[in-house]
Length: 171
Image 1 (spheres, helix red, strand yellow):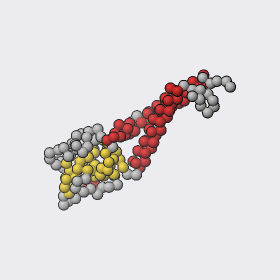
Image 2 (cartoon, one colour):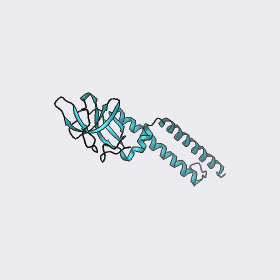
Image 3 (cartoon, one colour):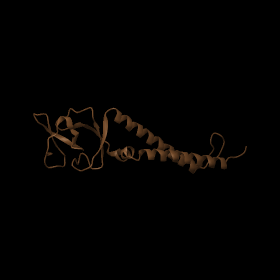
Image 4 (cartoon, rainbow, N blue to C red):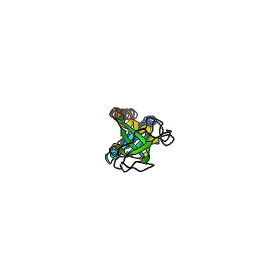
């Protein structure tokens, strides 16, 4: 196989280079896509327990619309309890404007009513299929991963160039 300059290169190194380029491109598109989503009022939240099973399982990631604080009975909402974010279903709206919530897997309602000012927003989508990717992108190591991917890209480019120069034919 020859490149556009007439140089031959190793098929394995070209396949590796293409694979790294595709992985890098996907990572960059996902990173900026998720960054844009968070800029328009959607926030990711990690489900820590099984209190919402079977609707939501521990380890899953959900997007919450922080612009939609007008919750209704049946909505899955994110709210503050102290310094913790809880994601449970709205069971009742009390006359004083507070909410009774409950995890789908729980037998009883949550102990304390949730005040309107504690509501973060409503869940809009479960990112179950993309949870591993989201975890990577929102982790503290995301910049390290970007640098590693860029470095891997440079190394594969250098390797492919070196192999192309070694196998070039004089015409």
